[in-house]
Length: 281
Image (cartoon, rainbow, N blue to C red; front, side, top):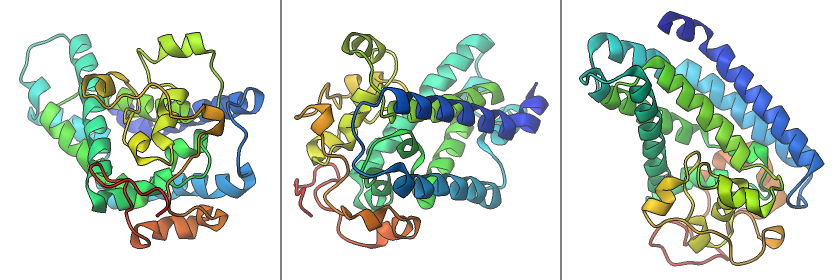
């Protein structure tokens, strides 16, 4: 089983990504939540270009994937789950939930530390909010996140299946909760008890720092409720919610070259947690 997952991991992940992306893009076309401020042809080439760049860099820079590393950890008995006698099903669920919590905490840290915020803010400088925003991350942030995941695998000792399931779910839910799609209010209210919904996560992309620093979850919504970072709705209705941050408001900032240089330009404004709110910066 482990050898099968290692051999077919890239195709499983590419297949899952492609299916969810196509489904979300079609949903956005049929039932959009908001009118886009900028056309797809202006934003999508750079947003999808950064996905391709990050995928290539990860393969070139890292000697092993998280799934490959989980095989090594399992063979050498590393991690908590490799020391406990529990059923594989319980271990799988625990691993997926624990990894999701670690990603939640990582997300909070990228909003709390000014140097990390400089990297992460590229995700927030998209001037619209749709399925491609869910994969728009700076390459350095992606590398740091991969390091966090490798460390988490070493500490937890999850099975390769658990790691693959988590990675696929994380990518899928990120595209879903960044989707510019309309859900009936009643369905959204129930759904967000189990998964982060687009309306829930859109709050996190508000231009106002006190809203940007809420709703950090990508997959499970429970951490925000548990740690007091949950905000049900933005201060204005979703149709008129201003997306982005105070910096980098010009359309040219949507170009790939300028996106990559954003960490080295401008100031951090009032966005790091605990900072003074200054939307105009």
